[in-house]
Image (cartoon, each protein chain N blue to C red):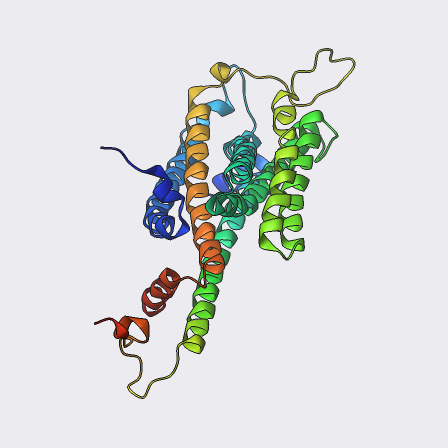
Length: 252
Length: 71
C-alpha cells in the first residue's frame, strides 16, 4: 500500500491529525517528567558521596542539558521547515516553522536561566562570556528576531519568506554552539564549558537526563501542534472546512 | 522533608531552575489554550455574521442558485 504523503501537507488534513496526537504527546511528556524528577531527586543520592562527590546543585543538570539540547534541535526544525517552505512553497511548512519558534525561544531562555543558576554555585558567577554561553545567547536573539520579523510584516506570505530566510541564515549558530567547547588552547580561550564524554556520565545521572530530554521532546510536539492548529484556523478561516470545525468545536 | 527542600543549602538555585522550567511550560500551555479558545470564538462570530439570517433559524442550508437549477 502506498501512502500519499502530500495529502498530509494540506492544512485541512493535518489539523485533525495534530489534534488527535496532542494528548498522546502530552501524556508521554508528563509521564517522562515524573520518571525523570523522581529518579533525579530520589535515586541519585549516591552522587553526593563516592569518588567524585557532587553538591546538590548538580541536579540542575536534569533541566539544563535537556533544555539546551531542545533549543538547538528546535532551531534545526525551524530552519528545516523554513527551507522546505521556501523550496516547495507549501503553506503548512511555513506554519510549522512559525509554530516552532516560541517553544524554541522558551527552551533557549530556560537553558540560559538554569545555566546561570548552576554557574553561580559552581563557577562563582551567573554569567560569563564563555563561547557556549555567548553563542546560546545569540541563538535566543535569533529566535526573538524570527518572531519579531514575522510579526513586523503585514503581508503574511512576505513575512513567511523573510523570516524563513533569517532562520536559514541563523542556522550557522547551531554548529557554533555545538563546537564551542573545542577550545584548542586553554591559555588562549578560557572556556568554562568543557568537553565531556557521555559515556563518562554516571548512569544514574544519564538516565533522568535522557528521560527529561525525551519528555521535553514529546512536550515540544504537543505544544507545537497546538500552536500549529491555532495558526491553521487563523489563516484558513475563509475556507469551508474551518466553518465545520468551528461549528463542532465551539459546541464541544 | 525539610532536608529535601533545603537541597544541601542550594535550595534557591535548584528550585529556581526547576520552578522556572516547569512554570514557563505551564504558562505556555495556558497561553496556547486561551489563544485557541479566542480563535474559535472569533471565527464562530465571523461565520455567524456571514451566514444570511433565515426565519427558520439555523437549520441546514437550502440548495440555492446553480445547485437547484440542475434538473
